[in-house]
Amino acid sequence: MKIKIFVLLVITALTACSYKFNGASTVGLKTVVVKVFENNAPLVVPTLSNQFTEALKTRIRNQTSLSISTTEGDAVFEGRITGYDIKPVALQSSTTPTAGANRLTITVAVKYTNNTEGKEKESFEESFTKYFDFPLNGAPIQSALPAAIENINRQLTEDIFNRAFAQW
Image 1 (spheres, one colour):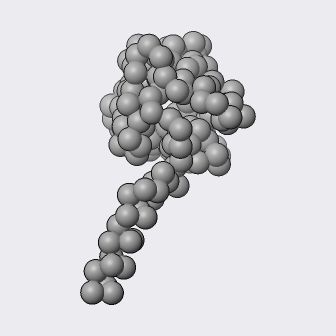
Image 2 (cartoon, rainbow, N blue to C red):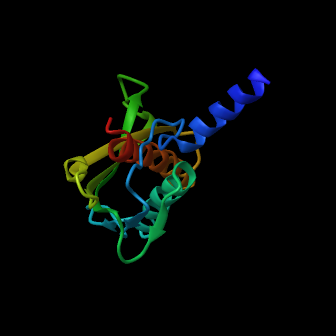
């Protein structure tokens, strides 16, 4: 009997808790707007804007119970992709320098606005940068870019999500 009561209390406490096990807090939030992140980088990949925006929406859907709205929300994510750069790294020879890998770097400027009363201080405007190194294995760079972009988007959305909802 005591075990049943204890289990019931634990379940009640966990369901009433507004924190998720990932450390995110969405107290007071019900809806969020994620505006399209325009690609303003000097080197423009046509699909990157949509890929990044959808990656951020997916992270929010998967890690919170927030509804994504297109018009008004308790919180708003907006911004732009400001950097997209590919550079050679891991030089292999000192006599005839050749790259052993390339580094893709993406920078995103994010403005997060928390519109809930008393939570305005959680709003921020920041840039986030991540990179991914991929080896040159004889294949064209274009064949490695989709996986590199996906990896960077995963890292960027994690950092942005944590900054907005876990205040890291």
